[in-house]
Image (cartoon, rainbow, N blue to C red; front, top):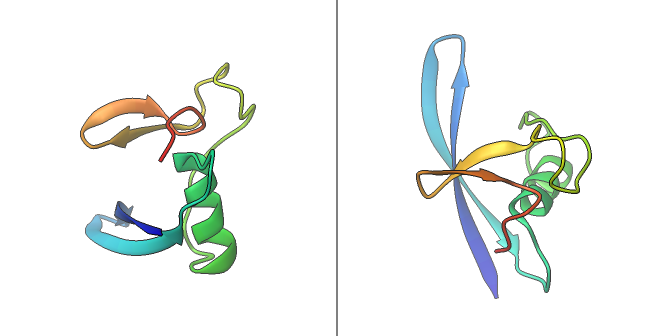
Length: 75
């Protein structure tokens, strides 16, 4: 089963929403999905991450309107 992500993007004052479909797998996190999108579908996608262990906070994003760590949120 696939999961659909709607990603709000901003470049030079312009904003839009892109929609991506990612294959769901056990243990898939939002960060894993973002990494999949960047590696397999859209290399222009930009996001930050560092520790991948819920320690540093570099991967903070909004998920369904809530501030979350993308390495922590399971899909």
